[in-house]
Length: 585
Image 1 (cartoon, one colour):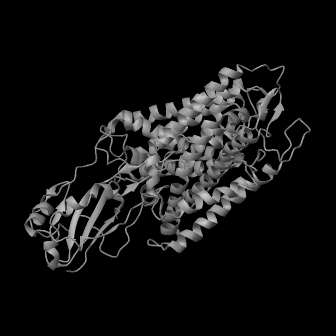
Image 2 (cartoon, rainbow, N blue to C red):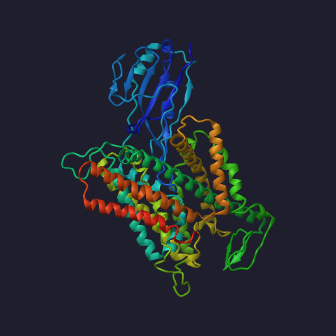
């Protein structure tokens, strides 16, 4: 008997974003070997998953996809089953209008143009050892029908969007508020939230089906399941390729930011362990005992202490290199989808951070005396720091279509999107404002990662560091996998690459992360600059240009529409320029 192969592959057309093609290749003499095939192999467990990341600071939202086609090739007239419309008659030729599954040997395409590609899992299972009954085989193969993807309600959609947008932007919000001033900071947070909600709504609008006659809210065009497809359709291949390059830059910025955060968290944990083990790593500053990197001089103390421990345990020079031992091996997994099981940690990390800020605020009390602290201001000229950071914090435009694809009531998508944006803005303001008004030292001294300051008895702070460290360790391999997949398939056009490519590309990316974490660990500046770049392209420019092009194609473009959306694009340009006007600190 000839060994046979079961191959699972991702969708091969832009309009099958929520489908999976299943292909079983075998010779015509092997029909007797497939009885009980479906019972022997758990196909649902092997179904490909994808993890759309709409923001570099967000968490990963894994989604299961259903099996659409079951096609047998090798026999003269193989049966075809369309799982949406029911099985076709036995031995009937497949309708040529139906999309064709990939053939043996072809590598399925992955995620057309999205910021985060739809990763496809390709598995080969040897079926040559199964000797089964032909009667039961035909009965099962002709009646197999998978359930369609389950519809999700408004509550699930809202919290999926909220969870996806939340992430490391939370850690820099108190710093961003201090850079802009507390009055201007609140105002800009509200303004950017509303603006991002509007442009994200344009993504939904330009991806809907054709509007009916008299419906002025919809534009005449095809339906898109991927925003990148809409970009290519309306703006052309060149701008689509430019978007892919910007998405790769965004991924790289996310990877560097995660490495800096993880280095600090690991440093905090190691410092506390060393402190309680040897009790020789504490300094008293302003009546507070803070665990410091003793390779550096604590501000205002005039004291510099160096221990043998801190020669080998430095937040900026050694700990980033130690992370290589943890992250590089697990990042070299070809399909690191096992880490999607930890997606729920994203919600937990947000709740832990909110709880920690409230806990510190209760201990510190309100500290808003303008006479004692002249750095307390309502308006500050460094406000581009918060506009760049929140361009990243409110970014979900490339992931909104997969998240809302199975909404039970599509008419409520925009409403639920607005509620989610409101929750995100409230979360940012809760952490940013509460920490700002209660911080006991000068407001201009708030660090770009407020978890850098942990006391020796701050158990809650240490627990937060441990939890966030573990959560980011599980997210980093997925981010690197998506970066690698998009780079190889969209830039080099190599779909089935060898492990040598993985080792080399991962080594280059990790080296960049380590060097920046060592010599330029300015995570706030990094996030605001990368956020302004990606925001200019995906938050403000592409949604407006696609919408204007769609209106023009339908003959409904007006001067008012052109003026308003051009102003949004100009804002994105000014926001990007502003990041290089203020100091890079």
